Each structure stands twice: as C-alpha cells, then as structure tokens.
Length: 106
Image 1 (cartoon, one colour):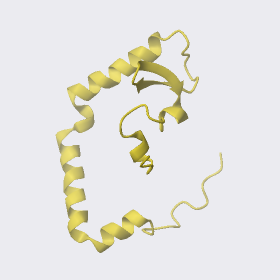
Image 2: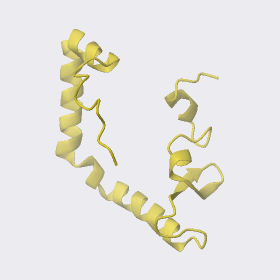
Image 3: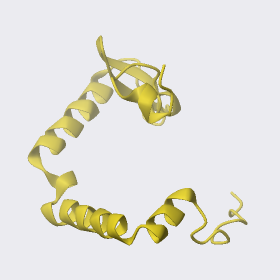
Image 4: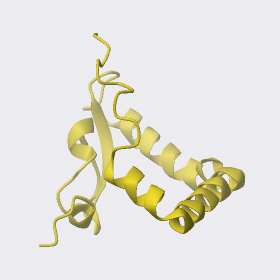
C-alpha cells in the first residue's frame, strides 16, 4: 500500500485546530479532560472491559461470522446484529445520537 503523500503537510489548519488556537481556555479544558480520562484508565475500566467482552463473544459465537470477514457486532434497538465494519461505524438511527453525530438534525 502506498504511503499517503499528504501526511504531515497540513499542520494545524483544521477547523478544530484553529478553534483551540483561538480559545486557549477551551484548549486547556480539553487537555485537562483528556489527561483525566487517561489517568483514570477509562478504557481499562471493568465496565468497559465487560462491554467489549460481550461484543467479542457475540461476534465469535455468531454462526455467520468468520475470522477476517470484515463484520462487527452492532448494538441496535432490536439487540445485537452482525454488520460490516464500515456500516457499523455510522449506523442510521440505530442509536439515539447517530444522526446528530453526523450533523443531521432531522
């Protein structure tokens, strides 16, 4: 696979980077929040470990799922379902904040 030729050429020009550059108080608050999450071990919490283990087990036990098939278990209103990884990253309406997360207010 070819390396991304644009990698490293756009230093700090995103809207987010500009916002935090123009608002040092917000930048400080964001950094404090991120360091607190890291310090508290958010991704290593027992609740999150159980959540991830449940999804892994559901994926493993699903007869339609194979290793390397590009499928993930998705939380939907109807329970757990097997979906492709790309579809699972932005499901339409499966969870309450999905549409808002993509900037759609309808």
